[in-house]
Image (cartoon, rainbow, N blue to C red):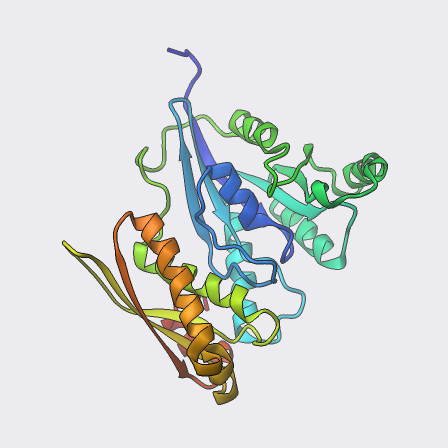
Amino acid sequence: MSGEPMRSGYVVIAGRPNVGKSTLMNRLLGEKLSIVSHKPQTTRHRILGVLSDTASQIVFVDTPGLHRDAARALNRSLNRAAKTAVADADLAVFVIEALRWTEEDDDVLQRLRQQEIPTFLAINKIDRTADKSALLPFIDDMRNRTGCEEIFPLSALKDDGVARLLDAIRTRLPVGPALFPADQLTDRSERFIAAEIIREKLTRALHQELPYGINVEIEAYQEDEKGVRINAVIWVERPGQKAIAIGHKGETMKAVGRAARLDLKKRLGRPVHLELWVKVLSNWADNERHLRRFGYDV
């Protein structure tokens, strides 16, 4: 048995929208917890993922991307959730995209500097870089620009370089006892995970046809000896969006329900009966009362 002391702490995964934060968290955990799509604003809530072993416990915190345009109440809520997570963390993993630096990246960097939190820089999506010779100058530029303690070029999608980042995180955690039971994966309920999985399938199925004015609410979640029965409402902001979400002859809704049911069955290890309805709630994303009802930080 190792004589090293137990280490534990909160590690926030921060970055602008769509740099691969959720994909990286899932890869670090070795299990899918955060939903993933190629579209910004997929992650809307702060989600904890707990990775435990005999010597350490890392509590990863996946956050919404910080948005410059926060005109809508929903966007302000997402920014608030991201900022709160950073303030409470012991260490930050700042995720950016290889060979790309934007004003939004700079906004995240300034937020991390304000909190004076130890920060690692993860340069993600190196698998998409055709000219590998451009990576070294970019890394040097990022080292000077960000002042981060360590830099990790990686591909979360291809699991390239992630193990090195994980090892470095373990050594940087403060000494202390575990913060959660060793067998706990997240602080979120199965109802919450079910809603997120349905929203993930919706986001993927709708492509660019529907703005981000969709939300999923679980109305009923019942377990018995036959399996799990879930009734969910998909809220949209306008009648025209309802027709798009349902699709021609209900085909979109059928495909979303089928994909979500298979994913939920795999996660829960039990048969799942899923019923979906689409309803209109005008401008819910600009209404703080509705946001609060849906579990957003307002």
